[in-house]
Image 1: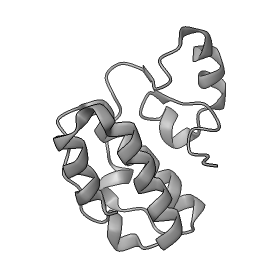
Image 2 (image 1 turned 90 degrees about the horizontal axis):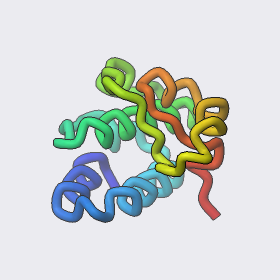
Image 3 (image 1 turned 30 degrees about the vertical axis):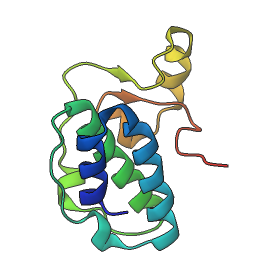
Amino acid sequence: MTLSHLYETIRKQPQFWSVALMDFVDDFRRQKDAKDVQTFEKPPDPNIGALMASIVEYLCKELSIPAPAWALDYPSLPNPWFVAGVENLKAIALVESPVVFRKRKIFVLSNFLTRV
């Protein structure tokens, strides 16, 4: 799945954004193809856009692929976003979030991109 396909899926079915995002993560890790992340359309939801940029930057680093300029330059959110949405997990997310997420004020748990 490319970013364009991911964006289109999120646009058509916004209620399933997290499923589509994780499908993208799985496909990118399997294919390890930088061309899948070179172009990007900003989604209407700034949280999703910043999250996508963070994920792309994280995966590129993980796979030793140069991250695209759009991901590296993507701005931070105006307000913090705790993706889990659970009040009791906020302190853990503050500590565990990788730098590429924290720099955009996105807070996730350490297992956020872990799949079984």
